[in-house]
Length: 366
Image (cartoon, helix red, strand yellow):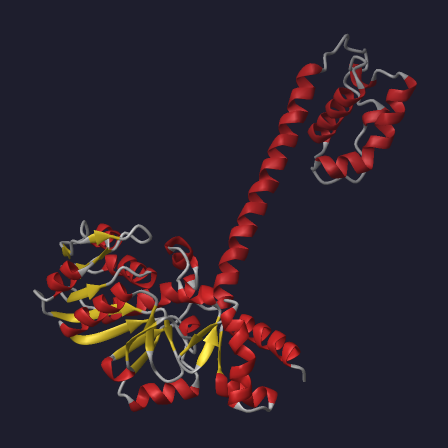
């Protein structure tokens, strides 16, 4: 295989897998590690790939996406993690939360708890929990980051050192297959380490999309974590690494797909029933209006008899406009074409005449 072709395939693999290891690429292409390094060297020089410890990744993976996009990413998983942590935390507990998107979802779930003592660097977390159920919230001061409204800097770490809490709950950007917990920004690493130093239990909240990937900075190893709360069990290789390091893995229960589908179907059915009801009401209103438009010019001597053209059939049709139209409209249309004044109705435009006749049929049907 020519190098250029292999380089093209390497780029494609990294785009699909987000990160690749040198040894994994060498095994895939059945070449030596050194050959892979020679292949990726020009790609790194051109800025198409970035070298990280033991592998390569796309340059844009070094930076997390904007905060609002991170809030929407893996939404079901983050909500499940938040709900599970809300079960873990008891009323009256003390905890530190960071300002990551996962911890904001956790804060939303914790609004069901009361009398919490919360230490955070996030304005959003403080806004969610400060007004609730007798909570006490302490917020760190420092430089405010524009992306997620989290305070950063040395003053934040100094602020955390005043507290002793039961749980320190932080999020990360990635967890690689060697059990390295990684982050994208130095300030976030410093905050996590400072929070862990003040807590009885060190908790990482991370959805399954962060497993098996790398980020710019190594934050802490698996033996620096007591509990990992996630939405899906990690792969066996990573699970073994975490178990060996003494990390307890708590898998949150995500909402069943069937129940979600049923809930959506229920909403759709309600909408359709509402639309059907509205259509029926509109039809009845149109028929009533047509009956007001129709006027009687004279009352025939045999008014007590029902004209043949409007006489109900021997077998009464269902009392719906569609069925009446299907059964009787050909007769009524014939009367209209011949100029008959059926039932004393004045000659009207076709639409009004038809509506009035249908109204008459509805009234006459038993």
